[in-house]
Length: 162
Image (tube, rainbow, N blue to C red):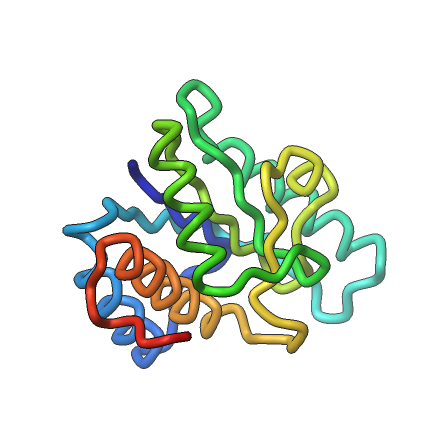
């Protein structure tokens, strides 16, 4: 199984890259992981609602183009209105995908969210929290949670939850 993180935006601060790299390195023996960074839409200084919809649309097209529809790649979209999962629930979802022989693409949208087209194609809409989190931090949290879930699935002592 392979996991690809499809993310809008690049040029992350050093602390984000350091945190991401730490969990990226740790997870590789358990789950082949790839980061795919897509350029954010060029934004106006004072965007209107129409501009925001246009940005989501443009970024959504790039996300869907990066999604491997030729293979068995499930599309999991991070969305504030998505389903919340416990770490154990995530471990179960990953185990299910592995058992089915599916890969996963995890989508972190841009600053204005993801397009309706991306949400419509999602196999799962997942919310990390009811809190609003900065997108750079989401990269680190996502990688840590993937690592923690895979640790559960591999009976590794990293996870000490109940």
